[in-house]
Image (spheres, rainbow, N blue to C red):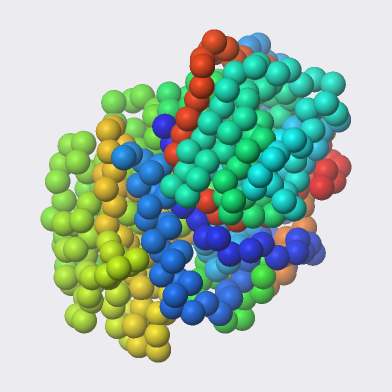
Length: 473
């Protein structure tokens, strides 16, 4: 089973808030509550720290992928995102319990479980906001063991049920993990856990995910959710936190894209990971041969920073770049290339071709002349897809995840969306209307399960949020 995807171990700075710079693409479009995504700015990192991060990124992703009745009122909501550490993570918040308490969580389409650290956490939770189950009048302990295994450690605890709120929506009796043991370094304050946005079929807890509870009960205006992510990678002007874009539920903000949304159905019509076949791949206009069928499957994963794929195809990408060299030691599976080379990768998933900006392909500088590429060799296992496509690609499109029919859509970002990346002001949480407080009832599908496990990576996240029109920080 999968949980989060690999993220950097860089410490999270103090939470900063302010007004969203003009133009504000969310004005007049936000229906429901908002959570700003903020990006943490570029920090000077030496080659050794980058190499250590790259190694952990690869190992964690490989661990991850391989080796009720509702009110009939419908609505929609927006969470503004925060971009942290020059595009290494994007995060948001939710609230749990009665009265509700806010927690910063990873938003991850590559997994399907929700978990947060417990107030009785013994290890790995210093400085992290924790959930006090005794303080919530609606909490129910399911007395079921819960264990999430990561490439760098794991979190353990039990499963519980409680009311979970996000962007004006509420699910009562949502099943989630309450973890009292976390490996050192797995959580970095102020991040408290993870919200999986994948399908129930890959949930370690076997519980229906928060988003799926809402959409299946008819709580959303439209059966879809969407991400728009900003780009601040390799920008020396970046601050600690920056506007990260938006995550919408129940609608797509039409001001954030131009043209049509191109939808491609998930193979087999059954949701597990958010999977699409990769049908075309080129580097600076030169095609890279791809297999067909299941060997071409790609997981579209907001919780992953980079793009991982089969060794022969990743090698073929860098073979098109003069001076590119395979990494060694901790950079095994990665490639370096001359920083003065502009690399444009294009990819298609069954229809239109989408371009990855050269700024996204260049992960970072290892020296004055040598850069590290954002594509790396990845070995997955079992039924996991061959490619894991993360934010390196997703920053270049509006991505839409549709429940019925199960499909993923991409659209060209508008000038309004791109302007968010020109702002240096951390967005202020957008207060939504009470009308957005649509609810659903969650159900635990397997209370007798002895234990659950999952694999994930670690990424520091922080967030600012307003839920139901009130600060819950």
